[in-house]
Amino acid sequence: MNPSQVTIVGAGYVGVVVAVCFAEQGRTVLVADRDGEKIEKLAKGEVPFYEPGVYLLLNRALKAGRIAFTDNLAEAVRRHDMLMLAVGTPGLSDGSVDLSQLDDAAQVIADHAARESLVIVKSTVPPGATRKLGGWLRTHAAVPIHVAFCPEFLRQGSGVDDFMNPSRVVIGAESDAVCGLVEELYRPFLSDQTPLVKTDLASSEMVKLAANGFLATKISYINDIAALCEKLGADVEAVKLGAGLDRRIGRRYLNPGIGYGGSCLPKDVAGLMALAEAHGEPLTVLRATAAINNRVRERFVEKIVARFGDLHGLTLAVWGLSFKPNTDDMRDAPSVPIIEALASRGAAIRAYDPEAMPKAWPLLGHAATFWPNAESACEGADALLVLTDWPEFTSPNWPVVRTSMKQAVVFDGRNLYDPKRLAEHGFAYYSIGRPAAD
Ligand SMILES: NC(=O)c1ccc[n+]([C@@H]2O[C@H](COP(=O)([O-])OP(=O)(O)OC[C@H]3O[C@@H](n4cnc5c(N)ncnc54)[C@H](O)[C@@H]3O)[C@@H](O)[C@H]2O)c1
Image 1: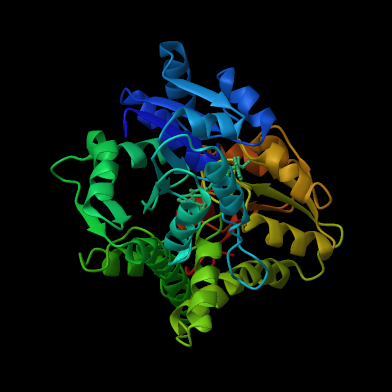
Image 2: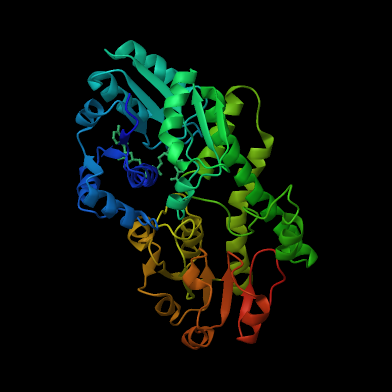
């Protein structure tokens, strides 16, 4: 098998980042997706979503002829014998995972693989799924197909950097030979500081879910502590710093706010819980994690209601809609339930996000109006709500914002600002886990 040529199935946030990073390292990459419109854009050098650094790498790879795109999956499967699956694995309403995109891709591989091939699953799947896929492919394909699982840890917003400089690479495989092939593919990204974890398929699948469950729990834990800090008059930012500086704890993902969102943490927590319950080992910690995450959104809305009472006739400016900064991804963004709850109580919402407004419109068009910049969203507003910590919101021109607003009130869902500074600018300021300045 030839690791210098790779086919990637799925041109989403993960598939495209992985593809341009492989191409940057000199590999020839063919990306296949059944969404013809997406493929057409990518082939022209346009990135169908916002992810820093991808545009540059994509266009460099196109110019060098190292990347190509197709919506003909059969052709892509025939072309290379190293295939990576980065299709979606969304959650179902019962918490379990929808593997139908993976099954559809497997069908095409079974029908069209022309020679012995390796299928590396990058999509997040429940433990057991890759082994099952391998068994199915072996009985349905005319050629030998091997499988491996290599969890993807990149974070949207810093995907290129995360992929190029991984904290670790985990490979799950059924044999040393297969593991060696995946290792070969990843060699350019392995440095002396990058541990390589080689394990079996189920353990590698579990690594991804266990890691995401832990990260979500860290966020919910600090949010629970933040709620208590508010009652006690303590400052969660000081608590976070003091506790997080303990190397056993660490400060990352210990950020109080309006909770986690996106396409990974909520669905991976739900998937892990569903899996645990099906096996009679309910993960009670994760149940609390998910419950706290829902509660922080409600608490944020309650703070606004507590300040104003009836929201009818009020105008609320919103800065930030995407689930985190540096992405336009609106999947499971906390901004959606928060804005819907406020709009249903009668508030008029004026929203602004640097990148996510096109994707927010179908989700929030009924509940909000959209404005071209942060300042215009604030005009005539009774309060400003900060829902995503985009860098451009960190240093606003407060005197200008203050003058354009009807009432000088800020609800900060990301603890972006220093309460003292906001008070100096004449704002009533409510944040998470810190005494309110009203
Ligand atoms: N987004 C992240 O930050 C992230 C990080 C780590 C892991 N993951 C996991 O990676 C996987 C992909 O995530 P994503 O955010 O890139 O998803 P996505 O929804 O953005 O992209 C999936 C792509 O696969 C395509 N697709 C689906 N079925 C196909 C098929 N049979 N043939 C060809 N194309 C097909 C879709 O058209 C879509 O473009 C998921 O399992 C996710 O849990 C995501």
